[in-house]
Amino acid sequence: MATLQLRPADLKRTIESNFLTLHFQPQVRVADGVLQGVEAFVRWPHPIYGLLGPSEIIPLVEKGGLHAEFDRWVVRAACMQLVKWRAFGVAVPLVATNIWGRTLQRPDAVDVVYRGLAETGVDPRWIELETPRGSLSDKVVVERLTAIETLGVRLASEELVYGARPPASLTFDTQKIPFPVSRDVQKNAKAIKGAVEIARATGARVVADSVETREQENALHALGVEIVQGYLYGPEVAPNELHTLITRPTES
Image (cartoon, rainbow, N blue to C red; front, side):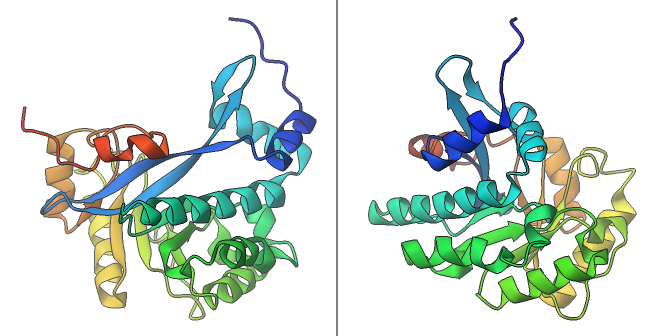
């Protein structure tokens, strides 16, 4: 396979031209298979190299310092997709996405999020931002997240499962159980139960990532995890394909 010749300037032009796309993976309630939200993943339909993913995009964002431009595009695109879905009667409860720590360190971090909401008129409660690893120990980032939360946007974190405690100024709506914690449920049972207990005490939901088998799903559910996402319910898909993934998989 030929080496990809990609530059940050190429990605910057693609962002400015609105030529990136979002794919989505469903978050499903274990008890009844009802859709609880989707997580957005950025893809780059490159005219030469085809559909590019995180392994190609992330290094360019970091090398080019495109964090804020990237996040601004993602938030607006997620909002626009929610508008389109709801116009066609597709009731997706929320779209979750990540946000860069470098974006949150900027003085205009709140505007990065606000502009997407304001330009589309989306209810901020339909958008959820997953905070980057290590953010709870960064005073500046916590201040930015606190300000973003006042917009009504939901916040998610995976740090509680690693023993971190959120500052008093933040209220997380979702506790994520990330890979690889979710992969080895037996080994990480204590950490998962701890995150579930904190979530229940604060009214947050718990979403386990990278769930690939029914056995894994059952083990997580037994520990109190109510929502899962992963290849058990399918890979990330284009917006018009989401309906193929929001029905419960048949027993094998």
